[in-house]
Amino acid sequence: GLPALRLPCLCSGQHLKERCTGMIKFTPPLYKQRYQFVKDLVGKYKPKKVADLGCADCTLLWMLKFYNCIEVLAGLDICASVMKEKMHRLYPLPADYLQPSERSLTVTLHHGSVAHEDPCMLGFDLVTCIELIEHLEESELEKFPEVVFGFMAPTMVVISTPNSEFNPLLPGVTVFRHQDHKFEWDRAQFQSWALDAAKRYGYSVEFTGVGNPPTGMEDVGFCTQIAVFVKKYPQTSEPAQSKKPTEAAYKTVTVYPSLKDEKYLQSAVVSEVMFTAHAIKRSLLDHLVSEQEDYNDDPTERKLQLQRSVNCFSEELETLAVEKSMEPLTNGSVVYIPLRKIFSFPKVNQLCGTFEKLRELITGKVTLSSDGSAVVLDTDHENEEN
Image (cartoon, rainbow, N blue to C red):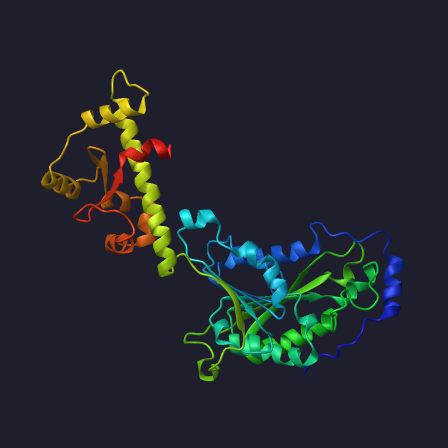
């Protein structure tokens, strides 16, 4: 069923070269146009789970990590060392931990072949194969449609590959564009292969490309040809469950867990609670200081004036006041910031979901009042922090 892996016709190539004057230059560069094509699809269809097969140096994964619709990103490549070189770009940024975004995002990289099935690749909305298939041996290419369309069975698949009809216009290209390419197809070959796979596995397919030919030479087509496959009948139950393998075929290289995972969530919530509590404390102390007449910049004098300016509550009154009020209180050198007040801040609220979850996550990690209703901070450290 595979099209013959024939070489481009050098006679027609010479004819094209005679028709083409000047250097072929793509703006933006061709690789950026391919990535932009995928980014546009993501922006349009808002997939939640995206896998990039043949992810190489993780450039496309890095670009996709900034799309808020995506909750799961997975990369697969046969060469672990290439992935490891640049995978640091996928790390959560320090700011992600201190003030995590409201969405959940897990990024996982796998080492393995697209000719093997692994259950970790089930349930994806979009699978991309950018400049991948031309690197496959014939035996791998034969298995590829069954693995991707039959087993993985994502909602959408994007496959790009060189258009060999364009090669005669590229300086220095005699047979293939890259020494590792096992074949390069013309449009008829690629479309024949793609239509066969689409028919066999229940997909529709449309053809397009990036890298426009020079004016007057439109008959050679795009430099990169692209097929977009869409599943005709989306899975309503667990995909490929009946033939789900019992063992993993891929080796997990690294996982950047979602900040929604419990231990990462706890760390993020504690950081956000302390950030919020200190902001409330600073606001309260600044307000109290602004009410003072003849305010003195001396830290010792400031502390004495602060203590004289606030109401001192008995233990019972403090507990009652904190429970009933959303407002922070001071008692001597201690500031009580009600958890309800902290929970009312959007980021804390969205991270935890419920007030009970907030209390559960910070218990034992944050100093609380005796009844557990308020975060306790010390005003003595205010000047050190500043």
